[in-house]
Length: 261
Image (cartoon, rainbow, N blue to C red):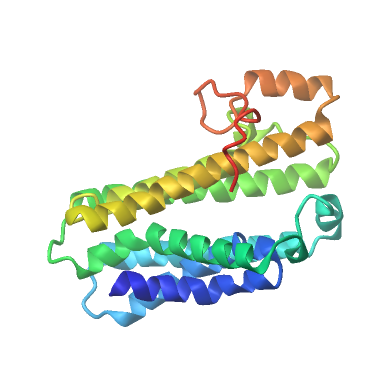
């Protein structure tokens, strides 16, 4: 079963989290998606153009994220800032680490299941496939540019919060871009998902990553309140700028303690 193979690949890649827990959801995430893209493109002949493009998007997205995180983590100022905020493996029982490992591996396999189902399906629908690809590309561009804008702003003033570029519209534009990317991925196969099991797996991956993005936005909100909470300009910024979705007046998620991932 192709999804099981994808899960095993994600499990192997994500096992890096046993070195440091945060790697389950950072390097394990990015490189799992990239390697799934490589695996699916190299394992099948006669792929259609849209399938090749979607596989390439997985590779670009995953490698870009993994390399971005690697460069950021090599920055001593960032690592010093995050000391004490990220739990170490010693803070968790082995059973808990194993459950996290299995859970994230399952999520990554489900997230990438649309391409797997497109490849094995006898249907070769094009319209929604290309609509989804275009939406995913837009999301990827937003995410990359948001990260670049934050990097540039922090070089100018490392101690100030970022409220320029996309950050004028939303406080977590990189997460918003990721939501758009995976929404496009979901749309790309919407006409070929067949039966309860396929729909369940695809929706589990899609809803799962949406939950993770909202959880991540909540975590950033809490961290920023610690760092900039006494800044009057920051208080004005967060009162007028949505947290995650532009033009949707959700300004805080901090009180929703169930949003943890």
